[in-house]
Length: 104
Image 1 (cartoon, rainbow, N blue to C red):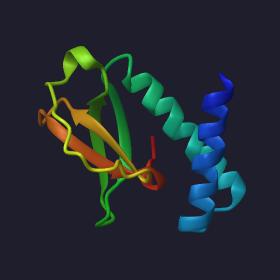
Image 2 (cartoon, helix red, strand yellow; image 1 turned 45 degrees about the horizontal axis):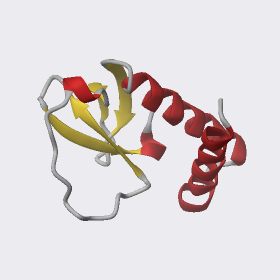
Image 3 (cartoon, rainbow, N blue to C red; image 1 turned 60 degrees about the vertical axis):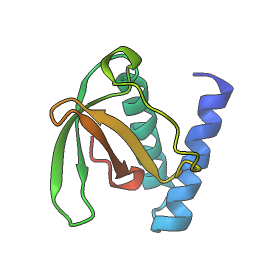
Image 4 (tube, rainbow, N blue to C red; image 1 turned 135 degrees about the horizontal axis):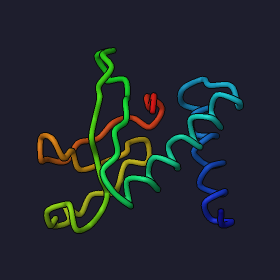
């Protein structure tokens, strides 16, 4: 763990506390789960679960590995810090979910 990744975890945890009303304990657990998932997705295809906005639970097989994803061109938009974007290997398209809704 580098100092930068610990900084990301604390920043994400405070975001969950402010925006989602989590306790700090819940927020830290969710932040660690998000960082672990992101690190694993950078190495290969990972199965994980998250709660959709509609309330359903979705099973996803996703990756962030460059060689498994199609090329992208930037949209010029600022990235939304509350969303995790990933490449869904089953549907073969990009998807995203709210980081606070990760079940893992």
